[in-house]
Image (cartoon, rainbow, N blue to C red; front, side):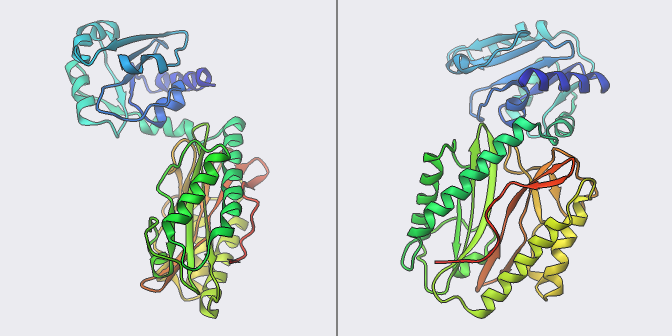
Length: 361
C-alpha cells in the first residue's frame, strides 16, 4: 500500500514541479512510507526526490525498525557522530534543488539541518499530502471500522463498573484496559471522563472527582488500529437524572440525528454543521455549543475535513470524519454525542452501531 501512496505523492510532485519533499516523523511519513516514528530529540528525515529515489537519515538505534522500499537508501549516524557527520554526503546525493516541499510542523532543528544542506526556501507539503490523505481507501476504512468496534465493545464492558463513588480516573483506566485487550495500539489522546459540573469542560480529562447521584458523565475516548483512529463520545447518566438534563440530552440527540440525515455525496461540510447547530439554537442552547461539529479521522485523531460552519468543501466518497454536537452549561453539566462517518458512493456509512439513547446506570 505504501508504494501506491508514494506513487500518488510523486504524481503530485510532478504536477507542482517539486524536486524534493522532506518528511519528518509523524503521520505523513507513516502514510507515504509505512514507517511509524514519533518525534524525538534525535534527527530523523526522509528525502523523496521527484524521480522516486528516497533517502533516510536516521539514528542508528532506529535503523532496524525501518521498512525500506526498492528505491530507498539509508544513512544512519551514532549518537557520538551526530547527523552533521552525514551532511556533505546527503548534500551530494540530493544534488541541486529548485523547489523543495517541507511539512508545516517541522521543528526548528530539523529546518536548520536542511538549511545546512543549502535548502533556504521551501513550500508547504502538508496541503499536497492533505489532498491525497483526505480520501480513504477501502483498506483504510476497514481499519477505521475495526477501531470503532473496539470503542463500542470497550464502553459496553466498562459500563458495569460506573457507579456512585467511583472516580473518573478509575473509569478511564478501565476503559483503556478494555480497549487494549481488544487490540487497540494505544490511545490517540488523553481519555475524557468528565462528570457533573466538569462535563461542561469540552476537553475535561479524567480527574480524581468521584461520580455523584444524578451526574451526567461525558466519556470521549479513542482507539488505534494499524495506526488509524476511532473517536467516540457518549454521555452516561448515573442514578436519578433530572428532567432538565434529560431534555437537554434529547436536544443533542436530535442535533446529531439531524446532521447525520443531512449527509450525502456532495453535501458541503458547513451545511452538516448548520444542520446540528440549528437544532441546538432553536431549542435555546446555541450559545452553549462552543466548537465545530466535527473533524476528520485517519492516521491523525484530528485531520481534514473539518466539519465547521466556515468549511465550504464538498464531502466526497472516502472522506471520514466525526459528528459530535454538544451543549456545555458552565458549572452545571455537559452533554456530547459523537459518531464516526465515512462518505460512500451511495451517501454515507455510520461506522457506529450503538444508538444515541441516553444510557443510565
